[in-house]
Image (tube, rainbow over all chains, first blue to last red):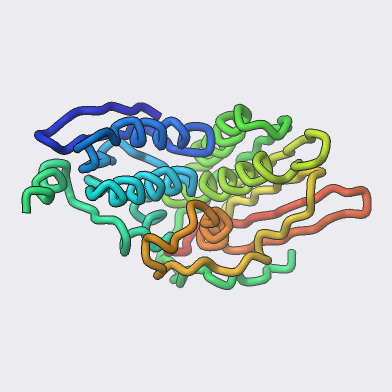
Length: 112
Length: 163
């Protein structure tokens, strides 16, 4: 798993590539939590390069979105595809997370 | 194999023409520790790749093994001396068969109730989805404990079923 962090205006974009499983999910959760400072509760997780996740990755996302919303913000997903999308569907996460086709639309969704 | 249906299995439709898998098999025995998980998943990836399995089949088998082994590592030997996880993965023409054996606490993943997938965010526990995912992505689950204390889980993911 590879993580990257960038800023688009007041939106923090966390890029996740590769595989999130039980041995890597804590790193994702820590990275998301580490960006939650002050006004940085608006987050987008860019799943463009995310090929695989287990429930450990979902737990990291769930913890992140709960924390962001508690701070008055949100955590939104971008560019989810293939098996990852199916894991989200099977887990009922598509009903509680906002998912956008790409990073630009996820970032601009905060402007409305 | 008992072939007990998973209670929350997704609807499956027979595919028109599933390409048979090339026979392939591999196994690995590790101590139940989180740093062993990548090696266990590598065995799954190698067998699925060698068999020519479609991406969705390979994904499902990897996910099932990941969830079961992660659960074993986190909970299987709690309160007991650390022990082994014995994984074998075999691709047959029409299915991938996984066996996972351990000597830890008995746990039949079929016994957990299905989670409430429509609960609001605030009511979602941070966890508890792994067993649901396993039951959703495999076709057959068998679980046995022998008198010597070995637990043996068998998972079957057929090819030619669409989810």
